[in-house]
Every structure is written in C-alpha cells, then in structure tokens.
Length: 240
Image (cartoon, rainbow, N blue to C red):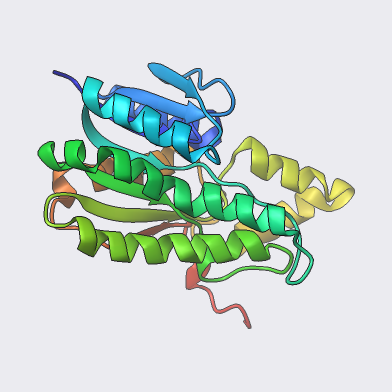
C-alpha cells in the first residue's frame, strides 16, 4: 500500500510545495486547510481550531491509510505587540500554531509508529530572533519548538519528531507583507537579500526539500531537532 502524509496548511505557498514534493516522492498527499488544497491528492477543509473534528479526521485517516508523516505547516500570525493582542487572537494562535499538531498526533501516533513514521512541524526563525509587533506568532513558534523537543522524547523510539524553521520564503503571504510598504518595498527586499548569506529569498520547494529529508530514511537518527532553512540570515549578528 502507498504510504500517506498529512499536511496542514496545505493551500498556502509552502503547503502547496509540500503537497507537490510528497506526491513526487511517491506518497499520497492529504491536505488539511480551511481553503481548497488543490495540489493534495485528498483535500479536507477543516478549521484547525475545531479540535474534535480534527481528531475525528485524524482517526479516520489512520484507519484508511498507512501514515508516514504528519507535517504541521498551518499557522496564523495576528499582528500586535505585547499587551495589544486580544485574548481571542492569543487563543487562536495557540490552537492553530501549537495545539493542532498535538491533536493530530493523538489520533495518528499508533499508525505512525507502525510505519516508522515521523512528525515535522514548520516553525520559523522568529522562534529565536524576531521583530516587534509579532508577539503571538513569535511566542507560539517558540512553544512549537518546545513541543518538538518534548514530543521527540515522548514518542521515541518509534516516531521521530523534528521541526524546520524557514526564514524569508517567497510566498504570497511574504509578498503581501512587502506590498504594505508601498514605494519602499523594493528597497526593503534588497536589504533583506543583502543581510542573507546566500543573497536571496528562499523558495517554498526548498522548505519542502528539508521536510522530505527529515521524514526520509537518511534522517533515521535525527529527532528532537530544528533544521533552519534561512539562507544564513540568523548567522548574522544583529548589532552589526
């Protein structure tokens, strides 16, 4: 039987690349998103805040497929600095960015263990170095990496758990962010490229490639770690 991979946030830029890469690698790509995941073999439209529905879907998938991996890519990024984020925004960020992956794992971990499976969470460089006005996003991505370390101990030795932390990746969301700067957008892009060791913005497929490595046999002795895919941006000392 062909093994399957569950991908949350499958309709976005990185999610689309993940679906494409998993299909190219011979897996059945099962996409979960509020929007239509057009590159998934099986697309489920689920609000990740709806835990009962998410767990129910995970349980059904675990009965129908041999699961190789759960890839938690979905995230929300409410704007606002410390003390300026509503309780609802905080709750939504925690539920989608962190708790949803635990809910899915609760429903699929037995299946994953049988299939030498793994869990990969898409974190962010913001978990370790950030900017103002992204307090909820930064906090939840840091919490997600904490979950990865703990879950690696809890689910080992039968299930591996890792994370990928992308830097600036050329997605619609990133382009929308730059568009808000208006006439200075291109200048800001140039600064970003200049401050990245590889001199460019990353591609969604490069994040998908890192995930493919982590769920594959070449990473069978890798668990509880975070693979940074940022072109060397966080290697630079911010004060210089």
